[in-house]
Image (cartoon, rainbow, N blue to C red; front, side, top):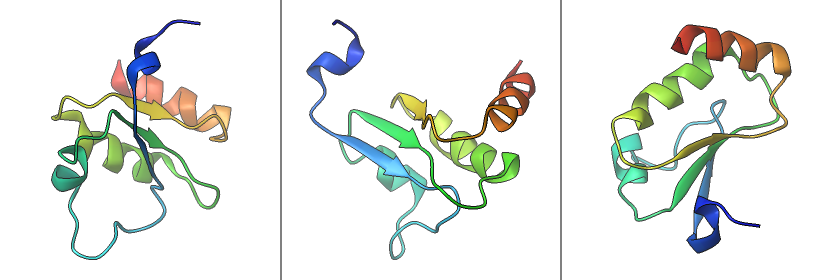
Length: 83
């Protein structure tokens, strides 16, 4: 299997429903040297919370991936907002 992930050493998971640790910012998280950021969680995931994380990370050159556990209806809404 090939893909961009074959050379990755580190993927950071961000839960849109939880604050970042301490005084961390998304700028700091994106500049840690992580190879990618996975966005997902288990509780109270909303379009607004997902979009907040996507917007905060989008300006940095770090691939963003959405966790498969996110409900399909939310993914469809996020996709339609991005178009």
